[in-house]
Amino acid sequence: MKGVLILSGGVDSTTLLFKMHSDGYEVTALTFNYAQRHKKEIASAKAIAKRLDIMHHIVDLSSLACLLGDSALLGGKEVPSCHYTKEAAKKTVVPNRNMIMLSVAAGYAEAHEIPEVFYAAHKNDSTIYPDCRPEFVQALRPAIRLATAWHPVDLRAPFVDMSKAEIVRMGLTLRVPYELTWSCYRGEERPCGTCPTCIEREEAFALNGRRDPLLEDGN
Ligand SMILES: [Zn+2]
Image (cartoon, rainbow, N blue to C red):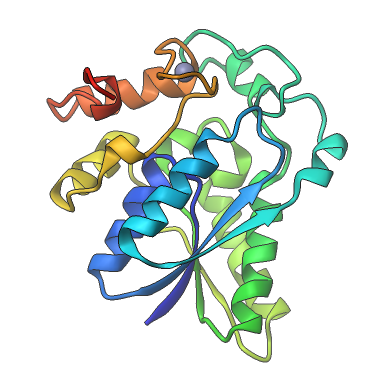
């Protein structure tokens, strides 16, 4: 079995990579440089791909950033220091990001005759980001299949009904090296602990009775 995975270097896509690996997939990972505020996630994705010795491409879409507005993730608005409220979430939206990345991934998959494209959209994201919702997956799936008629590509989002805490639970059983992952919107030495994704990440570990390894001393 072969699959293409969009690997951000965060908790969700890294867990999906290890799940696919344990299911016997030969994975090609794509990591997108869309001129993020910092490059720590990309460095994490590289380290994770290296750990499993899989094919990994960094796709440079940085020239698109100037077309995509002033999201906090692109270094525009200030990164909010609070839980994911509606207002905070809006500041971190990169418009249509998943659709853009999935389009590229589907093209890559068809060119290399790889029948499945995976991404790690999940239930927590779906309340915030429209291109993480089940309706989006259901709509894009047939569109990708129609667009890749010679070597049909199937879109897969196996975590779409799972919470982040459930994903971490799965990852802990798969022994995912979470110390290699990065989530914080601020690319400092250590996670800031106050941005929405830091708060969500810490909660997901806490709900599993664990501490985020990135917050342990020595990391
Ligand atoms: Zn943070």
